[in-house]
Length: 152
Image (cartoon, rainbow, N blue to C red; front, side, top):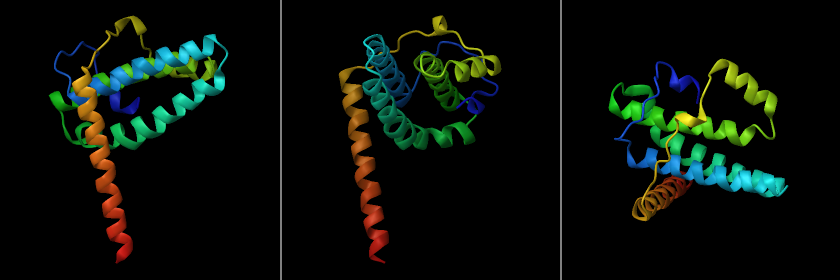
């Protein structure tokens, strides 16, 4: 994630793509839930939510969808993804600080971030429904392609 921020200068972008706004909103929501779980000493619940978010939303969907924008584009498309990645980096730093403070300190020494730079980027319920529909459609397509490949 940090390597994809190479050459990025943080600025509040008003024209983020839907998917980038969605992942930032989901990450903000996750941070609130996880920090609440930490305060209640419900570490298993916090780690379960974090694990699901990283595996399903980030790795299984978001990173896969944005990789071409990050590696091939140079303009607004890439900048929108980089703004989202910066938000994700700061939010993940806040979440991981409680359980892995040395890792967060090392990351901060390499790529300093500031939580106060972030503005809450909201998504409408319609946007969330659209992204969930896209995720479901993508999942079904992958499942269908996998089934077709195994029939050969």
